[in-house]
Length: 179
Ligand SMILES: [Mn+2]
Image 1: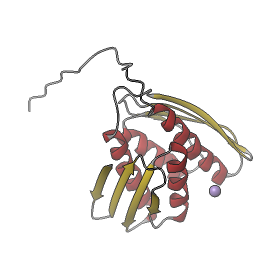
Image 2: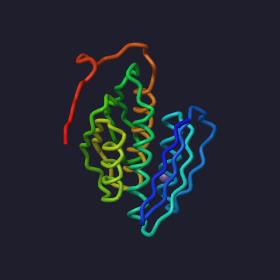
Image 3: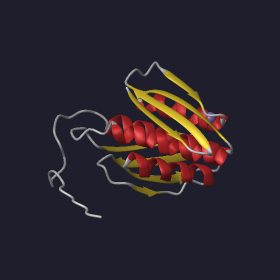
């Protein structure tokens, strides 16, 4: 079980991630975000508990992405498969997610939703993953965003599979900073 808590003057967020995929319990005060997080947990085969509240939906959404990302980063394994590449269709929408959970933060979108494009960017940054989302087709923004969360969940499921070997080639990084 990995727990992350984040509190500011704007929001309070608590995230728990586990391997018990039957344990999903989400309450963020934003019904569509709850729907997306239940979807993400199901497709990633993770247990996920999220509690969030705050002053504005915009703040709650971003801070959930940051806190969930921090929890995902804390679970990163050097010997996981690392890569995921899944494409999901949902009616009119067709969305590809390609990710590398190798510890480098990068996001390439966009999604046709300011809030959820921002969500994915914040999540990728704090989860320390490289995340590319390609909207190949689609008219309905609900379908496009939902297909993106499904594709992200399936790609995360693949990337988290333990292989017992590391793909890294540079070994341990020694970095010293004097200030
Ligand atoms: Mn839906």
